[in-house]
Image (cartoon, rainbow, N blue to C red; front, side, top):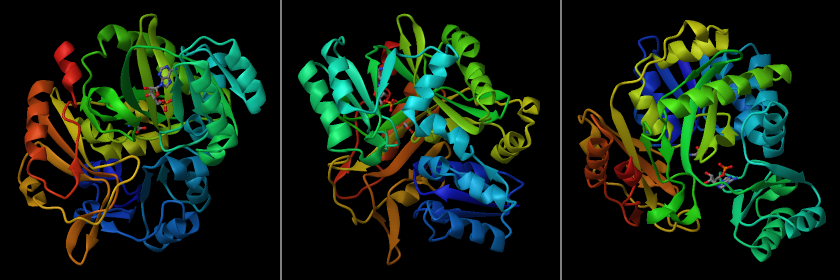
Length: 423
Ligand code: AMP
Ligand code: GLY
Protein backbone atom coordinates (compact mmCIF):
# COMPACT_ATOMS: atom_id res chain seq x y z
CA UNK A 1 0.00 0.00 0.00
CA UNK A 2 0.92 3.67 -0.38
CA UNK A 3 1.10 5.83 2.74
CA UNK A 4 1.25 9.64 3.02
CA UNK A 5 2.54 11.21 6.25
CA UNK A 6 1.75 14.87 6.94
CA UNK A 7 4.34 16.87 8.87
CA UNK A 8 8.05 17.64 8.90
CA UNK A 9 9.51 17.05 12.37
CA UNK A 10 11.29 14.37 14.37
CA UNK A 11 7.90 12.90 15.21
CA UNK A 12 7.06 12.42 11.54
CA UNK A 13 10.50 10.86 10.94
CA UNK A 14 9.82 8.41 13.80
CA UNK A 15 6.37 7.63 12.34
CA UNK A 16 7.88 7.18 8.85
CA UNK A 17 10.54 4.80 10.15
CA UNK A 18 7.88 2.66 11.90
CA UNK A 19 5.77 2.69 8.73
CA UNK A 20 8.84 1.66 6.70
CA UNK A 21 9.12 -1.51 8.83
CA UNK A 22 5.61 -2.65 7.85
CA UNK A 23 5.43 -5.46 5.31
CA UNK A 24 2.14 -3.97 4.08
CA UNK A 25 3.80 -0.79 2.77
CA UNK A 26 5.31 -0.40 -0.70
CA UNK A 27 5.79 3.35 -0.85
CA UNK A 28 5.87 6.23 1.63
CA UNK A 29 5.34 9.90 0.83
CA UNK A 30 5.75 12.75 3.30
CA UNK A 31 4.43 16.30 2.97
CA UNK A 32 6.49 18.37 3.38
CA UNK A 33 9.03 16.12 5.18
CA UNK A 34 12.70 16.93 5.76
CA UNK A 35 16.11 15.68 4.66
CA UNK A 36 16.11 12.63 6.96
CA UNK A 37 12.57 11.59 6.08
CA UNK A 38 13.65 11.94 2.44
CA UNK A 39 15.97 8.94 2.91
CA UNK A 40 13.02 6.58 3.52
CA UNK A 41 10.13 8.42 1.87
CA UNK A 42 9.49 10.64 -1.11
CA UNK A 43 9.05 14.18 0.19
CA UNK A 44 6.47 16.29 -1.62
CA UNK A 45 6.61 20.08 -1.34
CA UNK A 46 3.10 20.61 0.03
CA UNK A 47 2.62 22.38 3.36
CA UNK A 48 0.68 20.69 6.16
CA UNK A 49 -2.00 23.41 6.02
CA UNK A 50 -2.55 23.17 2.25
CA UNK A 51 -5.59 20.93 2.62
CA UNK A 52 -6.78 21.10 -0.99
CA UNK A 53 -3.34 20.29 -2.38
CA UNK A 54 -2.85 17.41 0.07
CA UNK A 55 -6.25 15.98 -0.86
CA UNK A 56 -5.57 16.31 -4.58
CA UNK A 57 -2.15 14.67 -4.16
CA UNK A 58 -3.63 11.75 -2.22
CA UNK A 59 -6.31 11.20 -4.89
CA UNK A 60 -3.97 11.54 -7.87
CA UNK A 61 -1.41 9.17 -6.36
CA UNK A 62 -3.94 6.60 -5.08
CA UNK A 63 -2.77 6.96 -1.48
CA UNK A 64 -4.29 4.17 0.62
CA UNK A 65 -3.68 5.74 4.00
CA UNK A 66 -2.76 9.22 5.25
CA UNK A 67 -1.29 9.69 8.74
CA UNK A 68 -1.45 13.25 10.07
CA UNK A 69 1.34 13.86 12.58
CA UNK A 70 1.00 17.55 13.40
CA UNK A 71 -1.46 19.40 15.58
CA UNK A 72 -2.25 22.41 13.34
CA UNK A 73 -3.77 20.47 10.42
CA UNK A 74 -5.69 18.21 12.83
CA UNK A 75 -7.18 21.14 14.74
CA UNK A 76 -7.86 22.87 11.40
CA UNK A 77 -9.88 19.90 10.06
CA UNK A 78 -7.62 18.19 7.50
CA UNK A 79 -9.11 14.79 8.39
CA UNK A 80 -12.64 16.03 7.62
CA UNK A 81 -11.57 17.51 4.28
CA UNK A 82 -9.81 14.31 3.17
CA UNK A 83 -12.57 11.99 4.43
CA UNK A 84 -15.14 14.01 2.51
CA UNK A 85 -13.23 12.99 -0.65
CA UNK A 86 -13.40 9.30 0.32
CA UNK A 87 -9.80 9.03 1.56
CA UNK A 88 -8.65 6.93 4.52
CA UNK A 89 -7.00 9.11 7.15
CA UNK A 90 -5.60 8.46 10.62
CA UNK A 91 -6.24 11.27 13.09
CA UNK A 92 -9.15 12.94 14.89
CA UNK A 93 -11.74 14.97 13.03
CA UNK A 94 -11.90 18.68 13.78
CA UNK A 95 -14.68 18.29 16.35
CA UNK A 96 -12.51 15.85 18.34
CA UNK A 97 -9.10 17.54 17.82
CA UNK A 98 -10.57 20.41 19.87
CA UNK A 99 -9.41 18.30 22.82
CA UNK A 100 -5.99 19.83 22.07
CA UNK A 101 -7.17 22.91 20.16
CA UNK A 102 -8.97 24.57 23.06
CA UNK A 103 -7.79 24.42 26.65
CA UNK A 104 -11.14 25.93 27.70
CA UNK A 105 -12.91 22.99 26.01
CA UNK A 106 -10.66 20.34 27.56
CA UNK A 107 -10.89 21.86 31.04
CA UNK A 108 -14.69 22.03 30.77
CA UNK A 109 -14.80 18.41 29.62
CA UNK A 110 -12.69 17.26 32.58
CA UNK A 111 -14.84 19.20 35.01
CA UNK A 112 -18.09 17.86 33.55
CA UNK A 113 -16.94 14.24 33.59
CA UNK A 114 -14.96 14.33 36.86
CA UNK A 115 -11.60 13.66 35.25
CA UNK A 116 -8.89 14.72 37.74
CA UNK A 117 -7.18 17.99 36.76
CA UNK A 118 -6.16 21.33 38.31
CA UNK A 119 -8.95 23.69 39.46
CA UNK A 120 -9.42 26.53 36.96
CA UNK A 121 -11.47 29.44 35.60
CA UNK A 122 -11.87 30.57 31.98
CA UNK A 123 -11.82 34.24 30.94
CA UNK A 124 -12.41 36.17 27.73
CA UNK A 125 -12.16 39.59 29.35
CA UNK A 126 -8.71 40.69 30.62
CA UNK A 127 -10.27 42.94 33.29
CA UNK A 128 -12.20 40.05 34.81
CA UNK A 129 -9.06 37.90 34.70
CA UNK A 130 -7.12 40.62 36.56
CA UNK A 131 -9.89 40.93 39.20
CA UNK A 132 -9.84 37.18 39.75
CA UNK A 133 -6.05 37.13 40.13
CA UNK A 134 -6.17 39.70 42.95
CA UNK A 135 -7.72 37.10 45.27
CA UNK A 136 -6.02 34.00 43.85
CA UNK A 137 -3.30 31.93 45.51
CA UNK A 138 0.21 32.23 44.01
CA UNK A 139 2.02 30.74 42.13
CA UNK A 140 -0.64 30.46 39.46
CA UNK A 141 -0.72 29.20 35.87
CA UNK A 142 -1.98 31.16 32.86
CA UNK A 143 -2.78 29.33 29.62
CA UNK A 144 -3.71 30.76 26.24
CA UNK A 145 -6.80 28.87 25.05
CA UNK A 146 -5.58 27.88 21.58
CA UNK A 147 -2.51 26.31 19.96
CA UNK A 148 0.74 28.11 20.75
CA UNK A 149 3.54 25.69 19.75
CA UNK A 150 3.64 24.33 23.29
CA UNK A 151 4.63 27.76 24.57
CA UNK A 152 1.29 29.31 25.60
CA UNK A 153 1.66 28.52 29.31
CA UNK A 154 2.98 31.03 31.88
CA UNK A 155 3.77 30.09 35.46
CA UNK A 156 3.53 33.23 37.58
CA UNK A 157 5.05 33.49 41.04
CA UNK A 158 3.29 36.66 42.19
CA UNK A 159 0.45 39.04 41.34
CA UNK A 160 2.63 41.44 39.30
CA UNK A 161 3.89 38.61 37.08
CA UNK A 162 0.35 37.28 36.68
CA UNK A 163 -1.07 40.70 35.70
CA UNK A 164 1.77 41.14 33.18
CA UNK A 165 0.96 37.65 31.88
CA UNK A 166 -2.71 38.51 31.31
CA UNK A 167 -1.63 41.62 29.43
CA UNK A 168 0.83 39.74 27.22
CA UNK A 169 -1.60 36.91 26.41
CA UNK A 170 -4.90 38.80 26.05
CA UNK A 171 -3.94 42.36 25.13
CA UNK A 172 -0.52 42.21 23.45
CA UNK A 173 -1.57 38.84 21.90
CA UNK A 174 1.88 37.31 22.40
CA UNK A 175 0.46 33.97 21.20
CA UNK A 176 -1.81 35.52 18.56
CA UNK A 177 -5.48 34.56 18.48
CA UNK A 178 -4.70 31.62 20.77
CA UNK A 179 -4.88 34.24 23.54
CA UNK A 180 -8.38 35.61 22.88
CA UNK A 181 -9.50 33.36 25.70
CA UNK A 182 -7.48 32.24 28.65
CA UNK A 183 -7.56 29.57 31.33
CA UNK A 184 -6.20 30.44 34.78
CA UNK A 185 -5.44 27.35 36.82
CA UNK A 186 -4.13 26.14 40.13
CA UNK A 187 -0.36 25.53 40.26
CA UNK A 188 0.46 21.88 40.92
CA UNK A 189 3.74 20.19 41.73
CA UNK A 190 4.98 16.70 40.92
CA UNK A 191 6.69 14.69 38.24
CA UNK A 192 5.37 14.88 34.72
CA UNK A 193 4.69 11.84 32.56
CA UNK A 194 3.57 11.66 28.94
CA UNK A 195 1.24 8.79 28.09
CA UNK A 196 0.34 8.28 24.43
CA UNK A 197 -2.56 6.07 23.41
CA UNK A 198 -4.31 4.73 20.33
CA UNK A 199 -8.06 5.32 20.23
CA UNK A 200 -10.66 3.99 17.75
CA UNK A 201 -13.61 6.07 18.92
CA UNK A 202 -14.53 3.76 21.79
CA UNK A 203 -11.54 1.55 22.72
CA UNK A 204 -8.27 2.95 24.04
CA UNK A 205 -4.89 1.17 24.15
CA UNK A 206 -2.11 2.77 26.16
CA UNK A 207 1.46 2.92 24.85
CA UNK A 208 4.54 2.66 27.05
CA UNK A 209 5.04 5.82 29.16
CA UNK A 210 7.62 8.53 28.50
CA UNK A 211 8.98 11.67 30.08
CA UNK A 212 9.82 14.89 28.28
CA UNK A 213 12.26 17.68 29.22
CA UNK A 214 10.53 20.88 28.16
CA UNK A 215 12.97 23.53 29.38
CA UNK A 216 15.87 24.64 27.20
CA UNK A 217 18.65 24.38 29.80
CA UNK A 218 20.09 21.80 32.19
CA UNK A 219 18.39 21.49 35.56
CA UNK A 220 15.02 22.43 33.97
CA UNK A 221 16.07 26.06 33.62
CA UNK A 222 15.47 28.47 30.77
CA UNK A 223 12.43 28.95 28.55
CA UNK A 224 9.93 26.23 27.62
CA UNK A 225 10.62 24.55 24.29
CA UNK A 226 8.88 21.94 22.14
CA UNK A 227 10.95 19.36 24.09
CA UNK A 228 14.72 18.84 24.48
CA UNK A 229 14.76 15.10 25.08
CA UNK A 230 12.75 12.15 26.34
CA UNK A 231 13.06 8.74 27.90
CA UNK A 232 10.76 5.73 27.92
CA UNK A 233 9.46 4.03 29.99
CA UNK A 234 9.15 6.39 32.95
CA UNK A 235 10.12 4.59 36.16
CA UNK A 236 7.74 6.94 37.98
CA UNK A 237 4.77 5.56 36.04
CA UNK A 238 4.16 2.74 38.52
CA UNK A 239 1.47 0.05 38.45
CA UNK A 240 -0.40 2.11 41.02
CA UNK A 241 -0.35 5.22 38.79
CA UNK A 242 -1.39 3.08 35.83
CA UNK A 243 -4.32 1.60 37.75
CA UNK A 244 -5.50 5.07 38.85
CA UNK A 245 -5.30 6.48 35.32
CA UNK A 246 -7.12 3.47 33.87
CA UNK A 247 -9.89 3.93 36.41
CA UNK A 248 -10.34 7.70 36.30
CA UNK A 249 -8.66 9.20 33.22
CA UNK A 250 -8.14 7.18 30.02
CA UNK A 251 -11.44 5.46 29.27
CA UNK A 252 -13.28 8.31 31.01
CA UNK A 253 -11.86 10.74 28.43
CA UNK A 254 -12.78 8.53 25.47
CA UNK A 255 -16.32 8.03 26.86
CA UNK A 256 -16.69 11.76 27.55
CA UNK A 257 -15.88 12.54 23.91
CA UNK A 258 -18.51 10.04 22.77
CA UNK A 259 -21.06 11.56 25.15
CA UNK A 260 -20.30 14.99 23.70
CA UNK A 261 -20.94 13.71 20.16
CA UNK A 262 -17.22 14.06 19.33
CA UNK A 263 -15.86 10.49 19.11
CA UNK A 264 -12.06 10.55 19.01
CA UNK A 265 -10.08 8.40 16.59
CA UNK A 266 -6.32 8.76 16.55
CA UNK A 267 -3.71 9.35 19.22
CA UNK A 268 -4.57 10.94 22.55
CA UNK A 269 -1.53 12.19 24.43
CA UNK A 270 -2.17 12.56 28.14
CA UNK A 271 0.17 15.09 29.78
CA UNK A 272 0.02 13.95 33.40
CA UNK A 273 1.38 15.35 36.63
CA UNK A 274 1.90 12.88 39.46
CA UNK A 275 0.86 15.06 42.42
CA UNK A 276 0.73 14.11 46.10
CA UNK A 277 -3.02 13.69 45.70
CA UNK A 278 -2.61 11.37 42.70
CA UNK A 279 -2.26 11.76 38.93
CA UNK A 280 -3.81 14.88 37.35
CA UNK A 281 -4.25 15.77 33.66
CA UNK A 282 -2.14 18.82 32.75
CA UNK A 283 -3.16 18.80 29.13
CA UNK A 284 -4.39 16.66 26.26
CA UNK A 285 -2.82 16.57 22.82
CA UNK A 286 -4.53 15.05 19.81
CA UNK A 287 -1.39 13.50 18.26
CA UNK A 288 1.89 11.76 19.04
CA UNK A 289 4.26 13.81 21.21
CA UNK A 290 7.48 15.15 19.81
CA UNK A 291 10.04 13.98 20.99
CA UNK A 292 7.96 11.34 22.87
CA UNK A 293 7.26 9.49 19.59
CA UNK A 294 11.02 9.20 19.10
CA UNK A 295 11.39 6.97 22.18
CA UNK A 296 7.99 5.24 22.23
CA UNK A 297 7.62 4.14 18.58
CA UNK A 298 11.05 2.47 18.27
CA UNK A 299 9.99 0.26 21.24
CA UNK A 300 6.62 -0.75 19.78
CA UNK A 301 6.50 -4.38 18.64
CA UNK A 302 3.28 -4.16 16.59
CA UNK A 303 3.09 -3.28 12.92
CA UNK A 304 2.03 0.39 13.14
CA UNK A 305 -0.13 0.06 10.02
CA UNK A 306 -2.21 -2.71 11.62
CA UNK A 307 -2.78 -0.56 14.70
CA UNK A 308 -3.62 2.57 12.73
CA UNK A 309 -6.04 0.69 10.49
CA UNK A 310 -7.73 -0.82 13.56
CA UNK A 311 -8.24 2.71 14.91
CA UNK A 312 -9.87 3.80 11.66
CA UNK A 313 -12.02 0.66 11.43
CA UNK A 314 -13.08 0.62 15.09
CA UNK A 315 -11.44 -2.77 15.78
CA UNK A 316 -8.73 -1.73 18.22
CA UNK A 317 -10.12 -4.17 20.81
CA UNK A 318 -8.66 -6.96 18.63
CA UNK A 319 -5.12 -5.56 18.84
CA UNK A 320 -2.68 -6.70 21.52
CA UNK A 321 -0.42 -3.65 21.80
CA UNK A 322 3.08 -4.65 22.88
CA UNK A 323 6.35 -2.92 23.64
CA UNK A 324 9.89 -4.24 23.91
CA UNK A 325 11.05 -4.90 27.44
CA UNK A 326 13.86 -2.37 27.02
CA UNK A 327 14.35 1.39 27.33
CA UNK A 328 15.04 4.31 25.01
CA UNK A 329 16.46 7.80 25.46
CA UNK A 330 16.29 10.64 22.92
CA UNK A 331 18.60 13.66 23.15
CA UNK A 332 17.59 16.60 20.97
CA UNK A 333 20.41 18.38 19.15
CA UNK A 334 19.28 21.97 18.72
CA UNK A 335 20.66 25.16 17.24
CA UNK A 336 22.16 27.23 20.04
CA UNK A 337 19.72 29.99 21.00
CA UNK A 338 16.56 27.88 20.44
CA UNK A 339 13.72 28.61 21.24
CA UNK A 340 14.38 32.35 21.04
CA UNK A 341 16.69 33.11 18.14
CA UNK A 342 19.14 30.91 16.28
CA UNK A 343 20.95 30.53 12.98
CA UNK A 344 20.28 27.96 10.26
CA UNK A 345 21.99 26.63 7.16
CA UNK A 346 25.05 24.89 8.69
CA UNK A 347 26.19 21.59 7.13
CA UNK A 348 25.69 18.51 9.32
CA UNK A 349 28.45 15.89 9.45
CA UNK A 350 28.63 12.35 10.80
CA UNK A 351 25.11 11.16 9.95
CA UNK A 352 26.42 8.07 8.14
CA UNK A 353 27.50 6.66 11.54
CA UNK A 354 23.83 5.77 12.19
CA UNK A 355 23.41 3.63 9.08
CA UNK A 356 24.36 0.29 10.60
CA UNK A 357 24.00 0.96 14.28
CA UNK A 358 21.22 -1.22 15.54
CA UNK A 359 19.36 0.43 18.35
CA UNK A 360 20.55 3.97 17.45
CA UNK A 361 18.36 6.31 15.42
CA UNK A 362 18.92 9.82 14.20
CA UNK A 363 15.50 11.40 13.65
CA UNK A 364 15.60 14.63 11.69
CA UNK A 365 13.55 17.60 12.85
CA UNK A 366 14.89 20.83 11.32
CA UNK A 367 17.07 19.74 8.40
CA UNK A 368 16.98 20.22 4.65
CA UNK A 369 18.94 19.28 1.56
CA UNK A 370 20.99 22.13 0.16
CA UNK A 371 22.96 21.37 -3.00
CA UNK A 372 23.23 17.73 -2.02
CA UNK A 373 24.33 18.46 1.55
CA UNK A 374 22.17 18.11 4.66
CA UNK A 375 22.08 21.42 6.55
CA UNK A 376 20.44 22.71 9.74
CA UNK A 377 17.03 24.24 9.11
CA UNK A 378 15.35 24.81 12.46
CA UNK A 379 15.62 25.19 16.23
CA UNK A 380 15.38 21.50 16.97
CA UNK A 381 17.66 19.91 14.37
CA UNK A 382 17.96 16.20 15.21
CA UNK A 383 16.70 13.72 17.80
CA UNK A 384 19.34 11.12 18.64
CA UNK A 385 17.65 8.06 20.11
CA UNK A 386 19.30 4.96 21.49
CA UNK A 387 17.84 1.87 23.10
CA UNK A 388 19.37 -0.23 25.83
CA UNK A 389 18.46 -2.98 28.26
CA UNK A 390 17.97 -0.36 30.99
CA UNK A 391 17.34 3.39 31.00
CA UNK A 392 20.90 4.03 32.17
CA UNK A 393 22.33 1.97 29.33
CA UNK A 394 20.06 3.70 26.82
CA UNK A 395 21.12 7.11 28.15
CA UNK A 396 24.83 6.25 27.88
CA UNK A 397 24.28 4.95 24.33
CA UNK A 398 22.31 8.06 23.30
CA UNK A 399 24.92 10.51 24.62
CA UNK A 400 27.69 8.51 22.92
CA UNK A 401 25.79 8.74 19.63
CA UNK A 402 25.35 12.52 19.96
CA UNK A 403 29.13 12.76 19.57
CA UNK A 404 28.99 11.23 16.09
CA UNK A 405 27.15 14.28 14.76
CA UNK A 406 28.68 17.69 14.18
CA UNK A 407 27.34 21.07 13.07
CA UNK A 408 28.07 24.69 13.99
CA UNK A 409 26.13 25.96 17.02
CA UNK A 410 25.16 22.41 18.06
CA UNK A 411 23.48 22.57 21.47
CA UNK A 412 21.99 19.89 23.71
CA UNK A 413 21.06 19.41 27.34
CA UNK A 414 23.54 17.24 29.20
CA UNK A 415 21.03 15.93 31.75
CA UNK A 416 18.35 14.16 29.70
CA UNK A 417 17.19 11.19 31.77
CA UNK A 418 19.07 12.29 34.89
CA UNK A 419 15.83 11.89 36.85
CA UNK A 420 16.03 8.13 36.45
CA UNK A 421 18.91 8.11 38.95
CA UNK A 422 16.35 9.08 41.60
CA UNK A 423 13.93 6.26 40.74
P1 AMP B 1 0.82 22.38 28.96
O1 AMP B 1 1.11 22.91 27.57
O2 AMP B 1 -0.55 22.66 29.44
O3 AMP B 1 1.27 20.95 29.16
O4 AMP B 1 1.82 23.16 29.90
C1 AMP B 1 3.21 23.22 29.63
C2 AMP B 1 3.98 22.96 30.89
O5 AMP B 1 3.61 23.92 31.91
C3 AMP B 1 3.66 21.62 31.52
O6 AMP B 1 4.40 20.59 30.95
C4 AMP B 1 4.01 21.87 32.96
O7 AMP B 1 5.41 21.81 33.15
C5 AMP B 1 3.60 23.30 33.17
N1 AMP B 1 2.23 23.37 33.73
C6 AMP B 1 1.06 23.38 33.05
N2 AMP B 1 0.01 23.42 33.88
C7 AMP B 1 0.51 23.43 35.13
C8 AMP B 1 -0.07 23.46 36.44
N3 AMP B 1 -1.39 23.53 36.63
N4 AMP B 1 0.77 23.46 37.49
C9 AMP B 1 2.11 23.41 37.33
N5 AMP B 1 2.71 23.39 36.13
C10 AMP B 1 1.94 23.39 35.04
N1 GLY C 1 6.72 17.00 23.81
C1 GLY C 1 5.49 17.63 24.05
C2 GLY C 1 4.60 17.73 22.91
O1 GLY C 1 4.73 17.05 21.91
O2 GLY C 1 3.65 18.50 22.99
